[in-house]
Image 1 (spheres, rainbow, N blue to C red):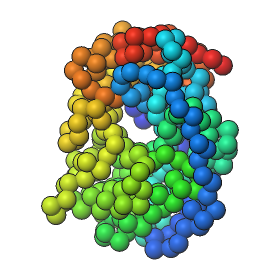
Image 2: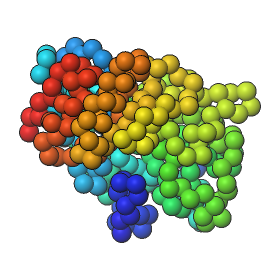
Image 3: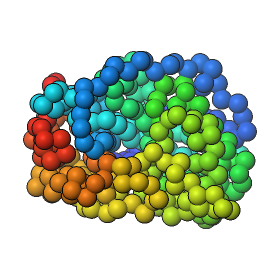
Image 4: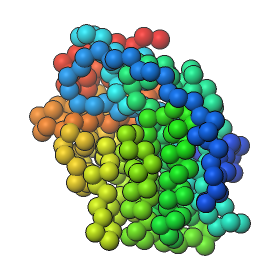
Length: 311
């Protein structure tokens, strides 16, 4: 069963899927059997904001991110590719949350040699987005620091196992309270991000700036804002500065959905990104079609160059 919510296709929890069934407090075998990411080749020099591409892997290949280069020098259009999306699910028997991969996300991870490594070899970072799944489990309602730290370990073990470059948090569709779960609390996300950053100090942690977690970044004298590498606006076709205490270089007030946001709007948002000194430009739903016209609309403003699509 599939649900379409604000233009983002979700796979429901009971769809055919592969699950990372790591119980809280358990040891994860992921890192022990993991694969190191391929050595990245230096990307061609590019001046301008960091461009991010979310890919709905239920429908599209991660390889599409590497098919766009700039005419002026041949650098990659996209710097960060986001696998959309794993889920935070809830085990009603053990009353714990766990990291879940539907069959399409699992396919990407299992085929890292062809779906992920080619991007990394071009110098493109690949991160895994994690999203709620209507079951009551979310980033904002871990009942204890121990529970939050245990989920952080599942995340960092997954990054290590599959040679990923980081984790993206998207606090949508948790439906807090389902299955007897708790409502959002102030400590949960702070404990989670603190533990994850300790586990992977040199990896990317990004924030899709939406949901209860995004408004709970400080607790007990600890503010996790600086733990994020990036934060971005979640509303496509709009300009909204994320309310996260990060420098402009790490923020994307612009957000576009490729193929649905008009080229004129994408260009306007890119122009504003540059003129106001922001360092990130977010795109969503890159598919397998030749989108060079849509992509060029913003690359001309960000980098002074058209984009070329190479199948």
